[in-house]
Length: 110
Image (cartoon, rainbow, N blue to C red; front, side, top):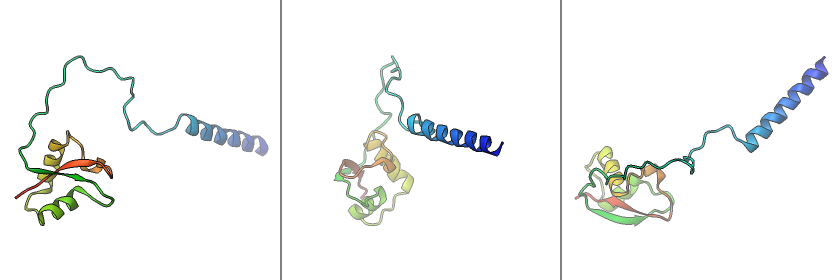
């Protein structure tokens, strides 16, 4: 009886490994490419902030706040303002999604 239980457990573990490798157990992080596009034309972004900016290429270790501090020294702007201005200048891109080697518009405050 113990051997049968061990055999069934072994088969179950093999099935779990097979299923995980072929189908996966984690949800997709990207939306499916077969999704239906809305028929309503997309509107323009609500309002692009009228903030001065510099286009900067991201290097390893750069973050939005470290770049803003390098460009203008200590910023007197709240972090929320810096992030919302960055997203407005870069079509809603979150600072966490910046990639090394790509160029982004970084807000500059006087």
